[in-house]
Image (tube, rainbow, N blue to C red; front, side):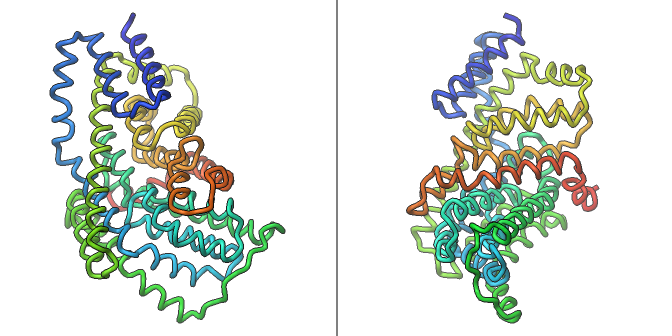
Length: 435
C-alpha cells in the first residue's frame, strides 16, 4: 500500500473503533502507533510511543487548560448561577417568553466565568427548569432552551474549548477569546429573538409572564452579579492589558473563584474536594486525548494526507466558501458521534492546512469550529448537554429534550452562515485590540 492508502485505511479503522465505543484517546493512539510503525518501522513507532506522552504534556502551554478547568469547577459551586438567573429574571421576566430569555441570559453570564457548557447546564438546570415549569412552559420547549443556552459556555470567553483549539492549532488564546465575544452574544441574541417571537405569536405558546419589576429593583438585582463581573474583568482585563499571560490568568481566575466560594459560605468542604477531583479528572481526560492525538498526527503527517488534502481542495478550483460549507457539513456529521475535544483533535491537523492555503484566518476558523462543536453538544445521538440536563432534572426524558432543541439547531446553522458571509464579526475585535 502507498502511504496515502495506509492513511485512508487508518482513518477507516479509527471510525470503526469509535463506533465500537473505544475511548477516542486510545483509538487515536492505537491507530497512530500502528500506522506509523507500518510506514516508518517498529523502532520508529516505539520511539514516538516512548517520547511523546511526556513531550506532549510536559509543556507550559498546556497548564492553561488545567487552570481554566479548575476555575470553572470552583465557579460551579459558588452560587453565581442563581445570582445571574435572578437578575436576568427581573430584567426580562415580564416580556413574552421572558423567563426563557432570562435562562439564556443567565447561561451567557455564567458561561463568561465557567468556560464549560456541561457545567453551565448542570448548574443552571435545577435552578431554571422548575421556574420555567411554574410559568407553564411545555417540557420540550423549556428543556430545549436550557440545553441550547448552555452551549454558550464554550463560545463566550474564557472558554476551555477555545483554549484547547489554541493549543492544538498553535494560535493566540488571547485573540481567540476576543474573537468569541461577538459570535457568542450574536447567538445568545438570536436565541432570545426566537423565544420572544415564538411566545409572542404562536397561539400554543401563550405563556404567563412575571410581574414587571421596578427599575430600582432591576438595578438592585445587578448588585448580586458583581462576583461574575469582577471575576470576568480580572481574568480578561489582565490578559488584554498585558498584566499577565493567559496561563497566569487561569491561575488567578481559579484562585479568585476559590476565594469567592469560601467567602460566600455556600460551598462545603465536600464541594471544594469535588471541584478538585472534577478538575483533575477532566484535565487527565483532555491530556490523554491530546497524547493520542499527537501520536495520530505523526501518522497523518507521514502519510501526507493533510498536505495532499490541501493541494487537492485548492486544485479543484472551488470557491473558498464552497470549501468551508463542505468542512462545516463534515463537522455537523462528526458532532453526532464525537465530543468537542475529539472533533478538534481529529480534524484540525487535516483541515487547518487547507484553510491556511485558501487564505482564511485560523482565528476565524477556530470560532466556526467551536460554533459547530456547540451544535454537537445538542445533536443526537451523543448530545452531551442533553444527557447532563436529563441527569440533573427529574421528569424530563432525553427524547423530549432532543425534540426541544431542534429549532435552536437551525438558529445555530443560521449563525454559522452569518459568520461565513461576514467573517469580520469574529475578527474585528482581535484586529482592533491586538492588530
